[in-house]
View (cartoon, rainbow, N blue to C red):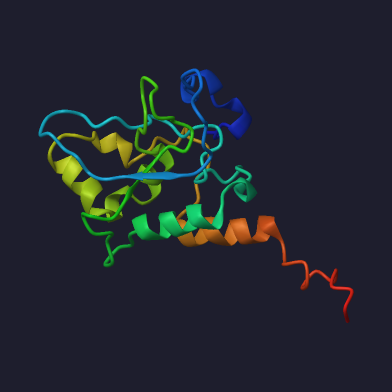
Length: 169
């Protein structure tokens, strides 16, 4: 089965209209875990068109602070993110919209099972199991945060002084 490209994602499904006068933000957001047993927590059902976890995304649009926040939220087998670690919200959801700050589908798919707060959401029935197990029909995601950060470094290229643009030599 062929995976869709980033261009094939349904933009209308993924970009909410910001309220009039709202300042849009491209920064990733983190939200604490507020759970009510049996009540589903809002989350993206698919990655947005510019999800940092998609291998086709321009990661130069994300800041060092965004990467630091992803590091704080990251978990690995045997080194799971603690319950109080941030859970990443979609960077395209804006406060004051109908679906403000839904949890990021890419984050849930890649890191979710290694985050104790997400595991609690799954255990309480506040998050469906498919949120952390995406179907094969999704576009390609980075395998982990290390791969995402390495790809961003490659996209950014070497610092100017390493690229031979330092004229002081």
